[in-house]
Amino acid sequence: MNALRSTALVLLLTVLLTAGAMAQDAGKDKQDKTASGSVGQVKLSGLMFGDYYYYLDAMDGGDKDMNGLQFRRIYITTDYTINSTFSSRFRLEADQAALSSNGKISVFVKDAYLKWKGLFSGSDLVVGMSPTPAFSVSEDAWGYRALEKTILDFNKIVSSRDIGIDLKGKVDGSGMIQYWLKLGNNSGNSPEMNKYKRYYGMVQVKPTDEFQFTLYADYASNPQVSDSVSGTMKDNGALVTAGFVNYQVKNSFSVGVEGFYKSQANNYYLTPGAERSAQAGFGVSAFAWLALTDDIRLVGRYDTYDPNTESDAKNDVRSLLVAALDFKAADNVNFMPGVEVIGREGVDASDVIPRVTFLWQF
Image (tube, rainbow, N blue to C red):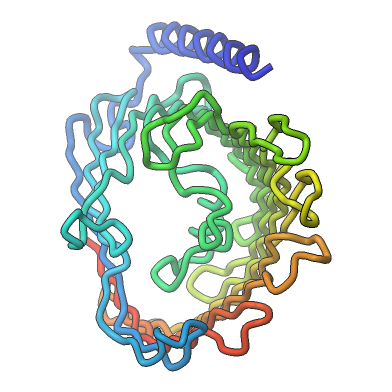
């Protein structure tokens, strides 16, 4: 079944590429020569954020009173407009999770892709290492990645990147309804290690400038797992569904709610000695920000996540609280004093982390 599905996708891609090439040849004289920028123009940009943090309390007692200055993300991005049809992005990231062999902050490839603009009317093709459609819209609406990842990213439900092929664009001429399809390796920023793939799909609806919502789903055809009781190999595929609703008045306020449900076949032993069974989990996140002045915002968010809804899976519910003030010191320079609280069911203490987050970009 997987082989048949992959073959069908390859054939579909071949048809799309051929049709797109014919359409491009037929319309060369009518092409917009500016594309997403002047042809041949190289755009270099960067972003850096981090915090000075202090563990006022901690689930792991050894972390209590831990403090320091940290970079949580450093981006250097190169965008190049090849011609009116093709453009490319290459982005490097450095952070404290990507360490070299000698323990120093290291660099890895975040994005490396080619974009074919207007493969057919209203739709673009992207090939390479690129974002996944899972939370791109909600992350933009949240607007405070420097404070924390969105719930799907924070709990590692879906990777922010995958190596694959994307088809994305408008369903209607106005762009009120947009779609995003992706066939990925399901390997994140790492090379492919097996034959199994991940299939992504997202629809975004924006009936007004202020209101939008998305519907999302993906299926990961993971390698089979061994069942110690039956002695057989079993399916371990995972299905994620999610939705996001947002209302935002530009430069005034924004409120949003995001939720997801994940089910994974044969990923849980219900009781000792039992055969593997399906595992289901869900999460909900609600956020808001309010502009107090032109340069000051109040920001808040609360998440809850249960990775296993089985009644005997105890002490696994997790929570996240983020509260901060956002001070705009200058264009593209922000300082955000606040606190992050991470809790877990059955643990008396929580990670209580006051911090001052800094962000600048160019």
